[in-house]
Each structure stands twice: as C-alpha cells, then as structure tokens.
Image (cartoon, rainbow, N blue to C red; front, side):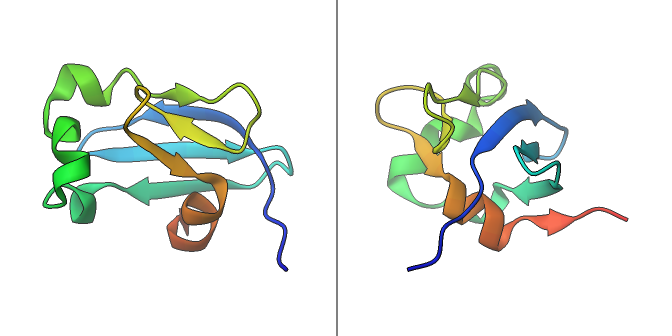
Length: 83
C-alpha cells in the first residue's frame, strides 16, 4: 500500500486550479476543471464556493464542505509539479 504525504496548505488559483503544498515541501498544481462535469462536484462551478477550500483537520485531503472534498492521494497523483 502506497502512503502519500499529507497536505500542509491549499490555495485557490484562477481557472479552477489549486496550489497544494504537502508536508514534504513538494508543491503541485491541481486542475479541478475535469471534475466540474461530475454531479458531486457541481458546487465547484461557483467561484465563491471554490475559493472556500481548506485543508481538512488531519491533512489527509482538502474540503469545501461535508460533501465536497479531495484526498491527498488524488492531489498527489494528479497534481502537476510547476517548474
């Protein structure tokens, strides 16, 4: 079983992207655009809602509310490292 680093911080960016910093010091940009067509992620289409993202209390992901969240593994695997 692979263990992924916990999330230290998250910052919303333009174009529905997130700047995610992990406890390892790695920084990745995660693109939320592909999620916007999935019903459970429809709320992310609203800019005010999208900007309300924060790290969950344990660092095992990020959350917007009790129903919309992403795990640290999703962010790590599908985030891209910025040059």
